[in-house]
Image (tube, rainbow, N blue to C red; front, side):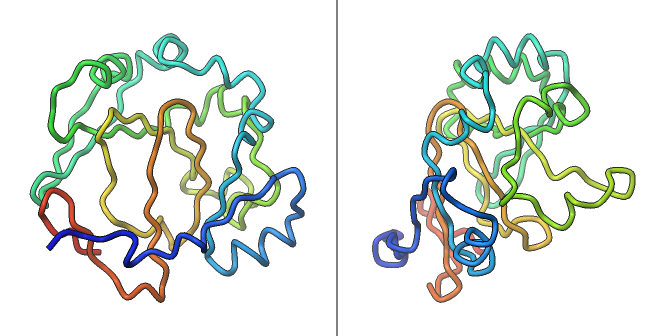
Length: 194
């Protein structure tokens, strides 16, 4: 049985807002505490002046020498492979894999790049407010994905929420609301259980 997105997802629950008009209190009341996704189109350019230069060449020049792991899941089995980021950026453009590897890294965390963007106040969380010496993890990742990459159905670390900015290309997110009653998704005829 093929999965019917329109039957299970209530697209009306995903809203669009202009981030410059929102206060932290409004954002928390309408989105954070109610677990409602929201889209801010074009806002990232304001939060990260200069981000229009963030292309493959920029990432090769600044992070190409760093190693990172990429993953993919085929028939329920996760595969992991280590890449130089420069090599992965080439792989993104030229691979012929039916299900390509999806790379994530924190190579930017201790570098000046982390200061190249400003996290809006309403995205700050209790964990980020702790002094950095007390934090075990930095909850910031860069993801690089070739066409056709995907993440398994999941709930974010510590049942948290995340903000994502698509720098180039497109990404499709599927949100399953608590009242949707669905916990599986069909991909290539296989069921992925949450």
